[in-house]
Image (tube, rainbow over all chains, first blue to last red; front, side, top):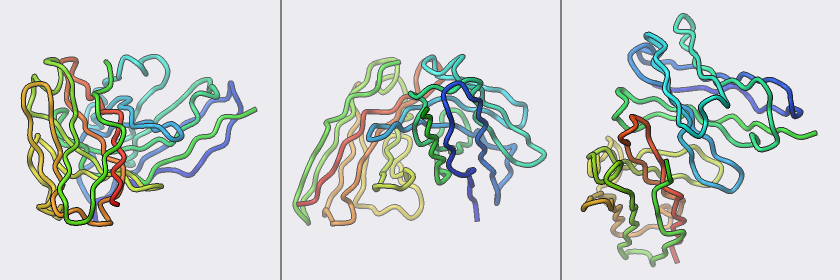
Length: 119
Length: 110
């Protein structure tokens, strides 16, 4: 079965760092792009960026460039989304999803990771 | 990159058809045939319903169809069923080689 399994919910304080993960299985991890999507509480979906684990080619939405870092470790079929200094406004559900090429839709989604940033 | 424009809500009775619009620009919806639609039930991850404007993934009911005219894409759901009640999001590839989502539409089945 093709699936993306994300790491569990996180509760952090402002200024702390965080790295959440997305592990792919059931398919060739290096043959698909992995993207990250933010959904703030009660709000819509926002495209953050994507990475091609095969060569680590990474692209960011202008809204998220410099705010987060997307990376991948193809040896363990896992992609990551990282913050160096969290803000309360980073509180959201974060989904990973895969697509075959940059022009393809996201066909498989992870279950989501809830990140709560509060003092 | 501005979000694509969708109506905040639509509604219909069981058995009826509804259409959700998604308006962008020539730099996204109008410029490419890479528009997709996602269904999201409360507390769940989004699910791909339509890709490349009008193609359905395996397993998606043929009651769901997509189309595009100019800078506006549309999702039509025919024979509405209670299980169709959800949020729907459009998404388009853009001239910046990124993707943009619409603001989402809440579908209520009366």
